[in-house]
Image (cartoon, rainbow over all chains, first blue to last red; front, side, top):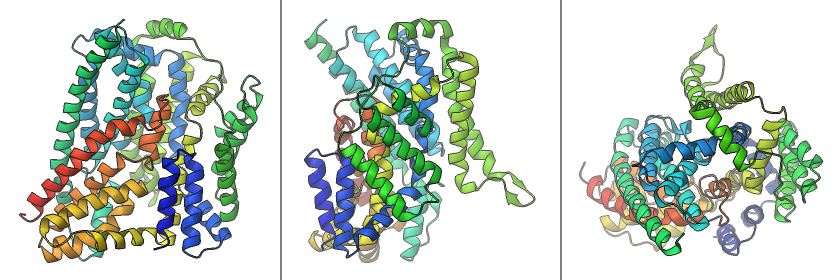
Length: 225
Length: 305
């Protein structure tokens, strides 16, 4: 039961608002010591795993291009473009993005969109632009809400779309684990049974985006110009 | 790229924390360039140094030269919508690459490892877009580095958090944290009837994911502990439906945890939100009803098909 100490360290550390990197190291130490590993062994294990997972940070290579385009007005252009569409509201725009994200992820195109590739340069400024065009004055607080919802659209769309694609890593993992337990299942069956949840996720999140429009309208009225 | 950014950080005399920034991004460059050569212990020390720099607040935002909002508006009008072309090139190249690259083989050997085709294509997309943007917009030669630094500094230490959490997952696996959690789940939960088992499995997936930050870590443990022995063997449920909906229950947990840093913490930094939990707060009202819906879906479907 001692390894659970590592989880206690994580929860307390995060709750106390310490720097997450420090919390992670402390938790790794706690887990290793509880399992009877020497500090050097823990350090080596951590170093090896960190090195093996370098591919996760590859996505940052996108930053110079995005920054360069921002320098030449990418976000501003996205804002202008959306302001011209009179039917566009932040909620509707995010609903469309959610749908697109789910469909492309379901076709296996998970890396087509992402927080760094699409949300920061395009989706968030477009949603903000739509809010400005529809509501006029938009306070800093409203902007932050709109941006957080834009990030949320990307996550929900990716999570509840990707499992419909038969060759995604999560489907392969499910198949592998079930096989270890003596069941042979076709990946296609797993994909099909991911559809009901995907539809519900779209309906639920879509409803929340419609509510977002109402909420922004109320905030705009309260805070006034 | 990280080395370049480190060098520029060092020379930026206006930045209050230029040495901290330069050291951090410099160490990251070392990790990317030499990580495979220096051995596990040296990598561990490198991680420790990165964490100490971040933990002691040695990192700060800087103000690299960029264009003003007014200039940007003028340029946005001048370029029109063609400014989107380089941005759209990234996914276009990435998709074409991931579909074709893995299949090209010369004399029976693959040109690139099919496993890495997607990642490589993505990088290829970044590079293509960068070249097109440089040729077309003709910015100063150092602009990509400076703009990259501007964005990277807004993300700060959160940039390595996803990788650190993946490493933590590996240490957890080594120390048997997962099995300990699974044992607790099975001893304390009400599992006597079908609905109880389904609810315990789905909620277990979500809570386990909440703690570990990754549904992939939760799935093997919960499935072996509750899913297979109870839902499938005892109550006769269908393993495929259980697996599919079980994994998606785990994703409800992913929506609500700071441990899933690349989905929840990094975007907050990227979008310059002062509250690093802002994205999670917006996602929790989706995660909870969706988890309930998953439990009901599994209960109604898994024993029927």
